[in-house]
Length: 60
Image (cartoon, rainbow, N blue to C red; front, side, top):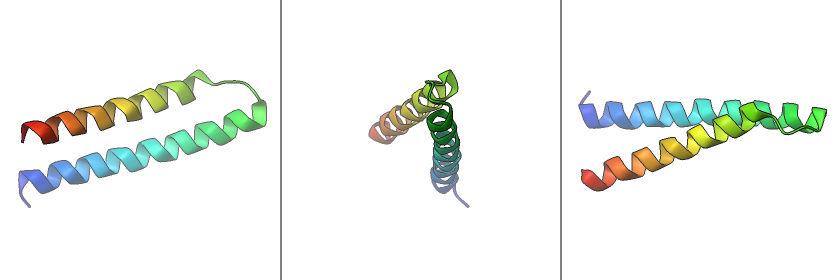
């Protein structure tokens, strides 16, 4: 398996885990009615992951 494919798989796995965490945090938040800082942190992490992926693809 070449490095490019491994990198793409790592980004895909990180995105899936982040989306799962974001979904769990969101539905927990809707039950309690309070904005959870964990939801904000996970959303920010997902945004950072997307920006890092886009910047690394531009350089390649």
